[in-house]
Image 1 (spheres, rainbow, N blue to C red):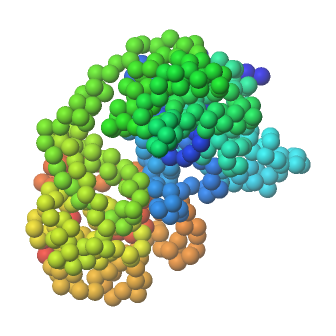
Image 2 (image 1 turned 120 degrees about the horizontal axis):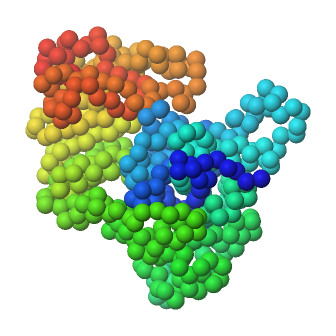
Image 3 (image 1 turned 30 degrees about the horizontal axis):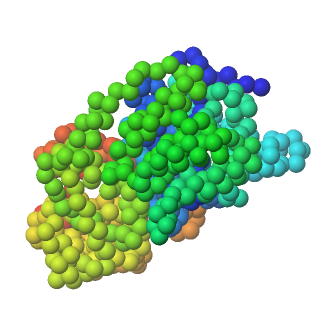
Length: 499
C-alpha cells in the first residue's frame, strides 16, 4: 500500500535516507545538512530528522565527553548535536520530532503494551517497533504544512546491531511510499594508505554489501576521504556497488564545513536526486551562500577569543558555542580564532594572566559539577579586572556572579547549592520548580528548565543595546539561577542585572 501523504505542493512527501558505513564521525550530519541547504536553495520546503540507535531516551543525561553537546530546541527537547547543524544550514528552528532515539521508540511501544493497545498481540521488533519507527519517520508529512522532502539521517554505522530496526523500517518506508519517492544516500570512507600511497575502495564495497544484505540498495554514494577520489575510483566503486557513476560523489576534507554544499552541487548530486524523485525545482540560488563564503574565506580582520571550559578535550561538547562565535565573525567580516583553555589552568591570577594573554574576548560556557569552578572564577576575575569583554553562559554566568560576590562584595564563601546544598551564602540557588528533582523526587532526565523563554531587558543596559530590543527570548537548559535574595546587595555593589 502506497503512503499518499501530500506535501504543500500537492505531491507525495519524498524521503531521503542518509546512512553511514565503515566508520563513525564521517560527516553524515554535515552531508545531510548540506544537501538540505541545496534543496532549500532550489525553492523546496525541507525538514530534517536524526535517528539515534542508543537506548537513552535523549542525550540529556549523557556525559559530554561521550556524546558531545546537547542541542536544545525551542520546544525544550534535548537532542543530538546534528540537530544544531540542521538548524544552521536550513536556517530553520526544528522541534523535538527532529530527533528520535531507540529509547523513545521502546518507551512508547512498551507504554502502549501496558495500556493494552495491542489487543493481546505478542509485541515484537517486527512489526511493532519498526511500525513506530516508520510513524516517526513520516510524522513531518502529517498536517497541512507537510514539506516537499524529509531528510532522515540514521545514526551509527551499517553493521551495528543497534541500527538494524531503523534500517529495516527505512526499507519498509520505500515499499510503503513508493520506490521513486525514496532515495538512499550512503556516506562511506575511502581511506588513504600513506606508505603505499593508495586509496582503498574495498571498505566501501563491503559496507554497501552489508547494506544490500539488509534489503537496501543505495541510490547514491558520498565518498569521504582526506583527498579527492579520482574519477577512475568513483567508476570502479559505482560498478561494484551497482550505483550509477554520476551518483558517486567525492567529498574530500574541506577548509570549512560551509564549503560542502557547493562541493556536492559541483558534482550535480542535488540535480540527480531531484531527477530520481521526479521533482521539478528552480536552479540553485547561491546569492546568500556566496556572501557567507566570502566572509568565511576573506575576512577583513581577526579576533582572538578564549573559550574557558571543562570539556575542551572534546570540542564537540561546545559545538553550538563555537559555531555561534564563528557566525558572529562572519556577520562582521572577521575571522574568530578560538583558543581552547582548560578551566583548571586558570585557578590562580598568574595562571589566568598567562593563559589569557593576547585575548580580545573571553567566553565561559556551561557545565555540570564543581570541577573547574575555581578556574572559571579565576578567568572571570582576570577578565573583569582587565576589562576584557566576556560572555558567561549557564554555569559561566553563575560563575561571574560568584566571582563578583567573592572579590567585590567580600562574600568569600559565596557558592551554589549545586556544589554545596548547605552553603551559608547561596548566591546561586535551585530554581523553585526544580527543587523536587534535585531532592530525588523525580527523574533527572528531561526535567531541567528547557527551551525558549522570554526575557525583559533593562532599558539602556549593554544587553539591550546588543539585542536592539527590550523583549527577547533565548533557549535555556539549567536547574539553578541567581538567588534574588542577594540581588539588591549585588546591584548596590555595581553589578548590573539587566534581564
